[in-house]
Length: 353
Image (cartoon, rainbow, N blue to C red; front, side, top):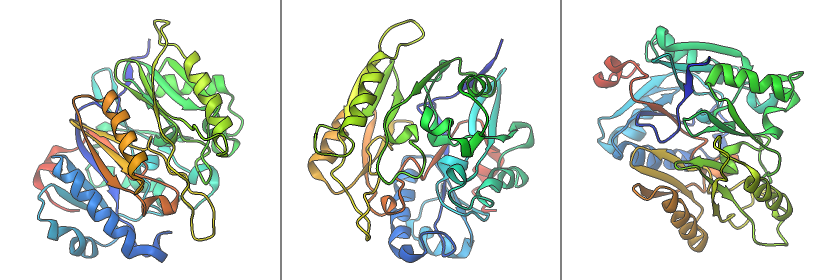
């Protein structure tokens, strides 16, 4: 019997990890713009009452940007990283036989697409600095798994995409049954929903689930739909919707489905479409932080749809037009840590390390 339990995002959260862009990241060509984006994001997160752990290459540099906010629940951790998408290399929270465990899976740059050597050491650095206590750290680094590729309801169900987890450049040679068994062993998820359809143009992740469909309380799935028959995503997202209607809960019941609009196309400087999505939101205690793209009608509709799934939460809109320029959004840029999983001595001291 497996006594592990992968915790859902709506578990009570104590801290959120973000990584501040620096000149050695892919953000270098637009550093001022994106750092202003991060300043606003960190301010919004901190004002929700959680501790914001900001990974920085240079503490002095970060303090100049963020200390003027006057917030006392921001901690700077000096560590190096290749990129700022902490969702995909941050630790995964699991309760195992009553023990709070942060699982460190391997990260290889979304299937060897980008350099990831420094990203892959971040969790070890957090352990070595005793932010993650050694007894709460678990090494699963031999298996490649990104946080944005998995969703759970906290009751043993896991939602993911076959396009991502079966990618040969992640865990080549492993079939669906072998990966399912490993996920069950590591996360306690014994009801796995494999989504076979859905993609976004410009997506580097091979269809991360947090760009397409999200599990929510009360057997609900929030998903991205496309109503424009002339859009390149129409047919694929229609197939995704059809498959979602076939999914069943462990009790054999269909899921409640809530459809999000697809943002109007956003393009980079070279005319390539970017993977903008409203599914890339972050649930944080009594808040839902939702990405927006300066599209008033779509932004407003997405907010209303998310509010249906989280009726007691405050939905906070965060402009993510700078984040999407590097093919990610709000959820990608954050990793929430539930209460009781980190070293409280460090968190309560507000001591930067």
